[in-house]
Image (cartoon, rainbow, N blue to C red; front, side, top):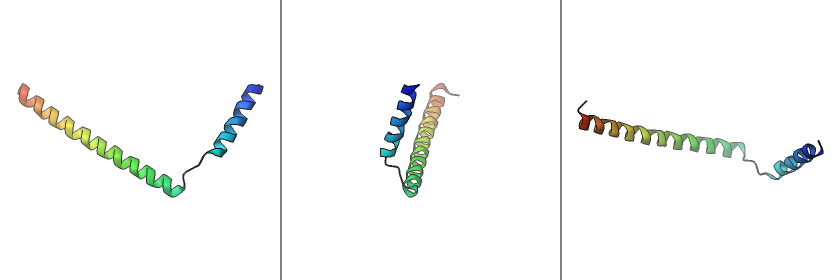
Length: 61
């Protein structure tokens, strides 16, 4: 039980050392992630569409 208490105490002190983002930084980071995810999804959709049409031309379906 002593190990668990020691672990929790050390974890708490490590969290106090952490530098947390401000609300504005968090909003900007979240927006940036959404934009990047959207662009990657669009890229994958375009590649999928092109490969699908190319395969249909080859197969003749």
